[in-house]
Image (cartoon, rainbow, N blue to C red; front, top):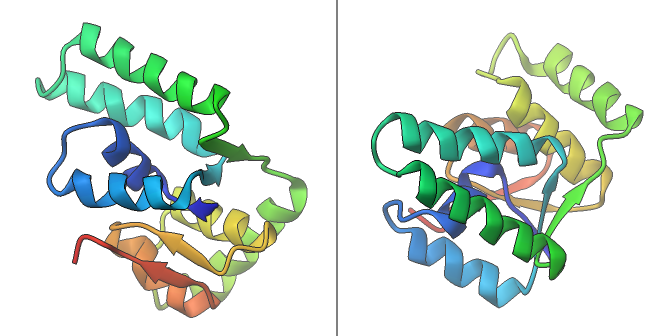
Length: 144
């Protein structure tokens, strides 16, 4: 099992540039994990595609059902957001916010991955990539 942020999870279900590389990585791993808050981020990301005219509402509904099927098959696992993760996220922000650009979703992903014992996170998000190194987790981007 490997850890994906929402940007990578979206690439597993949407026809985005170089999505085939992320899909291949997910197939090779067998299953992917992400923070539980990533589920709502996923829904929001799909809806962004609808609002921008890149996806129809019917296609969005099919994407949601496809994700649910992957959840049922345990190919996508949502990791719980426990209090310790929130405290760790706040500590990361307090320690690094003066020197690194951070968004709360990115920091929650990092804290969740660390708390659940992951040593690497897969993403192409430039902010997340920058913060990962500072907190001691390897950030892997197969798109570069």
